[in-house]
Image 1 (cartoon, helix red, strand yellow):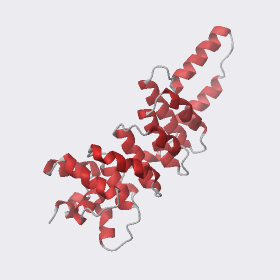
Image 2 (tube, one colour):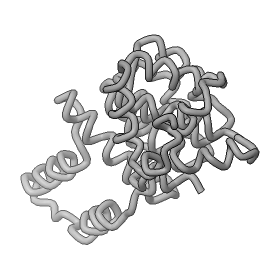
Image 3 (cartoon, helix red, strand yellow):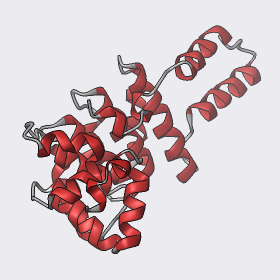
Image 4 (spheres, helix red, strand yellow):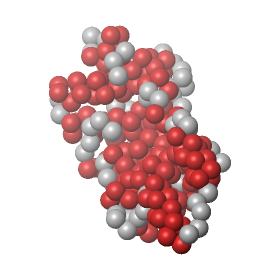
Length: 228
């Protein structure tokens, strides 16, 4: 029985399954197969089971594959990487399936791919989870000139996207001192108001903080459990 076909292994997390696969072969070999899957190629039933876990069994039993193989291939690239995959990831940032676009945006962030232009398009994607992933990625690989793009998303109608914009600004500020994080901007405004004798509207600041702190980001759910 192949490792990917072992029911016990299909219950493991994707991270565990990928780590085991890399240890048995090599990171590059696993990443190349993940890249192929993302690119729409058939990489074998065993690999589909490896990256898709128990959910891949339905496809092997005849269920429509839809976008799942591509999405699983992209997610697998978070755990195994080869530079050859960068072009395939870039191409699939415009995939018609939102789960594939979201996964590729996460790969851009994880692998530090300089795809800023594509990300600035994705921050206005119709799907909130894609927008959120793009904003976090832009904070990771973008520059000071991208600050306004991220900051505009602080007023996105979706709470999870506003949280992602906050995270993106924090990441951008950590890399570029010229960029003020949301917390830093509040502090600067408070200091300026105190120096000029102007009172700070503390209630509004508290509302902003609560809006960020109380939000729940659906991107942080378990990847395997999200394939229903």
